[in-house]
Amino acid sequence: MAPLLKLTGITKNFGAIEALAGIDIALGHGEVVGLMGDNGAGKSTLVKIIAGNFAPSAGEIQLDGRTVRFESPLDARKAGIEVVYQDLALCDNLSAALNIFLGRELTRGVGPFRFLDRRAMAERASALFAELKTNTVPSDLVKSMSGGQRQAVAIARTRLADPKIVLMDEPTAAISVRQVAEVLELIRTLSRAGHTVVLISHRMPDVFTICDRVIVLRRGTKVADKPIGATSPEEVTGLIIGAIETA
Amino acid sequence: MRNTTGQPRFDAVDFAAQYAAFIFLVMLVVAFALLQPNFLNPFNLLNVLRQVSISGLIAIGMTFVILTAGIDLSVGSMVALCGLAGAYVAKGGLDSRFAIGAAEQAGNPVWMAVAVSIAVGMTAGAIQGLAITRLRVPPFVVTLGGLSAWRGAALLLSDGGPISGFSADYTWWGQGRIWTIPVPVLLFVAAAILAHVVLRYTRFGLHVYAVGGNAAAATLNTISTRRVIFSVYVIVGFFCGLAAFILSARLNSAEAVAGLGLELDVIAAVVIGGTSLFGGVGTIFGTVCGALLIGVLRNGLILMNVSSFVQQIVIGVILVLAVAIDQAAMARRGR
Ligand SMILES: Nc1ncnc2c1ncn2[C@@H]1O[C@H](COP(=O)(O)OP(=O)(O)OP(=O)(O)O)[C@@H](O)[C@H]1O
Ligand SMILES: [Mg+2]
Image (cartoon, rainbow over all chains, first blue to last red; front, top):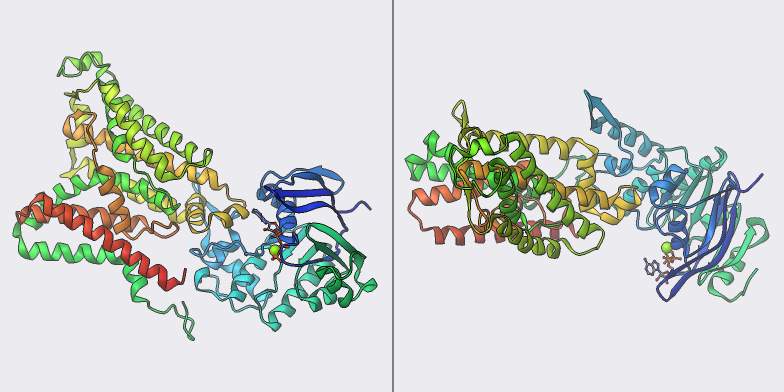
């Protein structure tokens, strides 16, 4: 079977900074891949390219064997790519429920007009939060929430659609041990249902518990791409900091 | 903002930031009613409402703009240009600019004048919206340019003089009444209700708040930030066109100096009404209260024979206080 997502020679320059230099990655169906690397290695940049937020300076993206060119996050979302952004991409002035549905709000028709269905969105948000076992309240404004509650909102978003790929950029950075377990469980569920998950994390145990494969970026280049069984936390640490050149 | 029982905790500063205009408005009305028996006279109150309706209509459009963390300084100049364009059409050109009565044969029907006035406003707004979203010039600069350019265009169009003397059909929109209520007031109320519904109950309205709250997050969530920002400048242009027509109908004259300094009243109404200049927070209800507050204050001070110079000072001080409250609320939220 052809890979679900295939990146070839993805390069990204920000002025003089080369954030990514010719990245090749292939993701299979239902695979859980850990993406690791030091601060500034280019992980988030890669996520934003796959998510249609940045256009790559060079390189090609193939989805299900077809070359795609995302002009905007909407194109990527339509193609079945869901993202938990590192900065969570939340609007502080809106409620948790509205943040979850931002860009794909539920509406109901009144005559020829369509109006927001706030009640339906709140109910759906409640159900999603229950599933994630978080104490987040749908009607609360995001500005008044804790870091973990905010993260739950960003994660809940990915549950609205039936995505092909879920990209999670440090989804467990601000949450409690109990909630980390929930997120890892969610990733497992997603994977069992055939969704592909990319988990970016600095937490070695998370990656080694849940991922089938680990990819390491260092200063914009891929230095390792190995099945999880063929490596160890020590080796990955060495690769991240550069003590080990490549593997 | 929740305590252990799960109820939102009461926060005085937040509350003040949201309802300050309404509370202050009620206090002012009570104070003037006690000090000046004439104040509560229905004719006086309707007069206040009628005076407020012009800047109030534009303030409704300005609320959309400020909610996206933008600003439109050009509204006064736009009013002059739109009013003249509508009047020009109504009169069928400059040749009959002063001709009263006779002009009605030469000119065009009222609906055309309204349509042109509004179309000019929306076009001017669209040009500013494009400059902001495509050329990435900050709204402050674009609309400061507009403030100068639209006024210049109005002077060119009018060749320096007013266009006056409209048909009764035309002036009815500024001077007429339906059951004792002035037509401009009815339009203001209708526009406020419509704008409230759009902002609170539609996807577009939500996107306006999202873009103002966090434009980058809105973009990542597939909202076209550009389209939203472009739209709000077209919306304020629409209201400028409508208000310009009503103003020319009320004065039975359109001229290039119309709406001079109007941006102050409009922006003050929105900001005093609790809409944050940082975007993302504010309501039409607040804006209506802000507009009424300015109108009531002017009227009450006039009734009390306070000089118009003092009025200017008072309004300026209140504007600054309103933003100070907003800032305090912002600090509370820990931004
Ligand atoms: N919008 C941008 N403009 C300019 N430079 C950028 C931009 N975004 C990222 N960079 C640069 O690209 C490089 C990679 O950044 P990126 O955010 O992808 O790192 P990361 O691997 O996600 O790091 P972290 O673990 O800290 O999140 C950095 O040098 C960063 O300064
Ligand atoms: Mg990152």
